[in-house]
Length: 132
Length: 295
Image 1 (cartoon, helix red, strand yellow):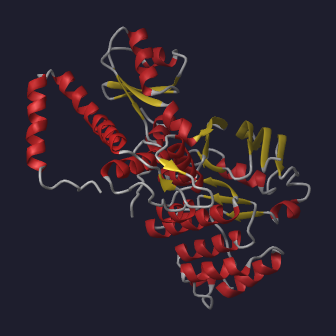
Image 2 (image 1 turned 30 degrees about the vertical axis):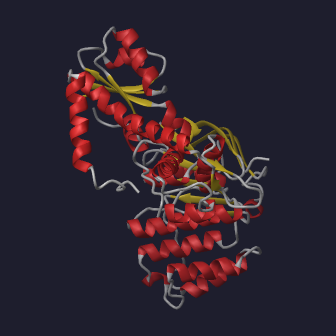
Image 3 (image 1 turned 90 degrees about the vertical axis):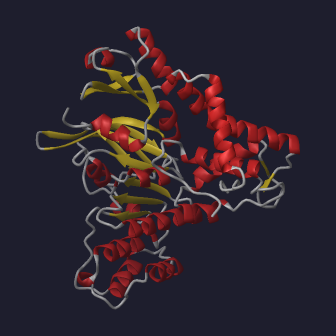
């Protein structure tokens, strides 16, 4: 399944779902025009109150990640290449903030931190796409 | 009109108060998780809704009616699974279902049949020979098959293994999907509360302590870890938003009714130092911190 929830993570479930949709759009797992599962069909296997899913979907429509077409299921909105690049950047940024804070709090020099990231990128080069 | 309304309800047993000054209203479609320690008064509250107990003081209204005055009119619209639901042990499962079908005019046989199949219930087996999980499933089936407007579950997961609990949860969610049923449930399984509830009411020391949309709780509360030498528990408690503070080992743990950033700022201002940590707290930890016994 495309989505999962962790009720113990401390992150509200609607936000977990929003993050996952955004990440799927950024990584290309969900493409413009793809249909989202209905609230009902998602709420049962996830074991989540349908209102929670509805809330996540509505906020994603508000954020223009998803769009309503009259009488049709919810679909992924049209995103230009530039916008998707932005979203990727935004996501990566969010993931790197804790690392940056940690580096600063331990007094690790910027060059050293950047080198480390480069090293990690080299190591994972070639097996990307594992976040789908 | 509200589904459920409590106004300033007091109820005690003998000289012991169990609920004090409880007020809240539940609107259609809400899913309310009722939390509290064992003995906090959750079951008493549910018994007041069902008209099985009378208030000492205050009013309880269910669908605008007094459940003590016309209990049957109210109960026809409610589905109820008690913490220790007693089904007649000498009846076979099929006979129990027939009994409930006779009790509720709105019985929906398709719903009942679908659940019998999903749960794989042995219709010919005697209630006394069922496993605990199966007995709970029969009780749930009886509670939901007349498509109640209000479903009340007292510790629905009590004694169930994780798979059976999940099945129970999914059945309730199906009902939500299909009929928009209002649900009031008490549970010690925070994961279930997080998945199901839209709102949380927590009872502590006889009183309603927290009553909030679940998402607001996530964003509106934080746990502060303060080095023991920086302050005393009483000093933290004197700060406006601090709900509780306790010494835990060499540190103080305090729950604040603000988000972590605001919490950090408040502490920095009052303590004149920065070495405290403030973070969001999962429901389970919040529960333990708030009601926490011992040191």
